[in-house]
Image 1 (cartoon, rainbow, N blue to C red):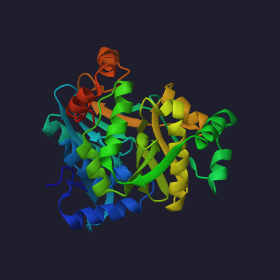
Image 2: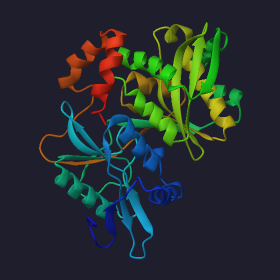
Image 3: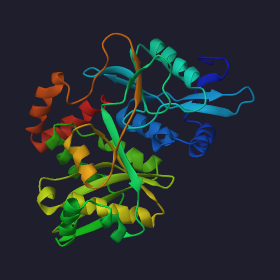
Length: 344
């Protein structure tokens, strides 16, 4: 049954139907402003990997053609609350195509029926009357160089010297689809930041559902840095990346991202999307040092009561973050996936 009937029909898509999913993905790939997080594969991967239900809305014209889409994830967590998020565990999403107001109204109606007091749209045009946050996050995107020499030249001088040093160290680079090694390296990285690691099932599901791979840097045979990247259109998205405690001294992250630029170019990419970071953080400064200019990201939100917050900089989570940094790695790897499923 449509949630909204005029002027467009709004309904929830059946992502388990291969024909429906293919039709939506074709629309996404041919619509300006699309991200990999709009693909049905992302919604299925999150549902499978984090056990948070996909709620994908589509807007259809009277003749049955697609006019717009809104991928949503129904997030339920005892610790972090309930919300409909576009898209769950993604940094992009929001309405794609036509029908902004109709799809937003459909999302709010669905949230009300599901008992979710919060709807969060990460990007896309903002519905009228919704709260806009364009100060918390910034994104970093630029064109890849013609070759590795051009990529190096695009990095500001001070950071370029660090990257050059990484080229002289005993580091090897490999690409593949080994989520176990990646999960081990990334898990240590986020533990050191005070953040719980995502379930390994999420990484496996993303590799199964989307065009993605893993680039790993090793020192003396041991993995010290690793990044799981998404590929969409002509853009590479280094999405989940990090390093072990040894990575900093070895400049392994610098080696990793420079190698990824060459790897992505070999795959036919022309743009490098360094992802989002919170304004004023060390991660944002790192990306600026690589020659990427920050661009504010606008997210739209509607909620009843107190707004849901999963920002680790929030005062209510400060003690939790500090305590998580001190957890032994085996404990963090065991408990992290259970907690992170509710972050969204």
